[in-house]
Length: 443
Image (cartoon, rainbow, N blue to C red; front, side):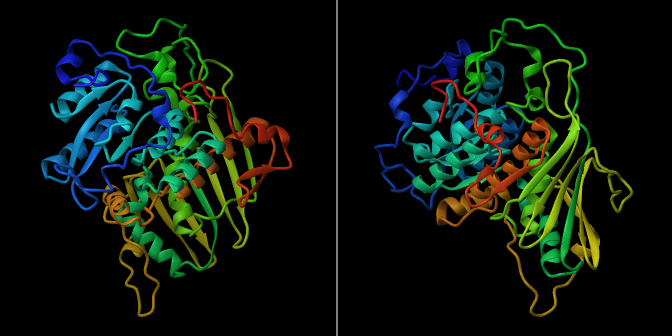
């Protein structure tokens, strides 16, 4: 066994840290196993070998799903990685003894036998790890939001295209049955031309009871958790899960659920290649504690050619579901002949029965029906077909979330050039399209 791997037995005794791989993060010099079938190794049409990076929260769910697929002979789970030893130990027991364990993701992406990785780390890691994985020839399933800055998104798109890897962003709402029904209903003009999409979501929490900085717990590699972020002392209010309420690592509700709800909106409006021309946000930013994402906010995105408006309300006015229950987030699509409600937007997505029950007449426009979010990703890996939530689409949605936050922080309307992928006419805002990243965890 090479010294950069930890056997399950060795891990349970000590979860060792990893040294930097350094130059191995450049363009790989080996032919990835996904391309050529060698003796004992699968080719493009056989079982994929998967590595998991980040195995807490959604990462546990993804790992559990892949373990089920492994038992059915669909994939092989060969590696798991996390900076928290407690999570890593639990994941090791779930994955089984064939899966090597690591703290440092770089050992996973440079393994020659691994075809693809599932990245479920905190948001501030998505861009760097996706780029590095693509540069090592790995296909990527990365949780949403795709990126935390506009420049990260550009780098992700460039890396995926250059290395010809299939990337699926984890806004799985597009792959649900009701998303298919809603999309089909809307594009066939059943409510006329859609001019406004209003999203609603409940407010973000505030850190009203701040706690002092402290030493990190012994089971956590704090340096690796921070990764590309600036160095700062450990504080309980940074993790786990609550990183979402920090602007630099999470971005609040708009960059969390907004990446789901607005993903569906751009998909249904056939606007994946489009961007808003203006973005204007108002809201309330906390003045106490470490959490600095907006508690409440409203963002208006104006699109042109075709003309329509996307509005993010946090909180907004929920629309009761047809069974009378309330749902915390969703969107109403307003057309010149009617309206349609879509509740949720993630793995739980529902639409009105009129869309589900609609029978397309002869000549109606058909739309793609996803076989499932991971199945669609596997299809993209094997055929080269763009995935339903490919990196270009994922970055486009993340940009909406990023621009909304920037407009709120700056207190003014922003103007966006979709073709150039940049803010125009505002030097200060342009400087915020990227942030410095800490070496060696950088693009």
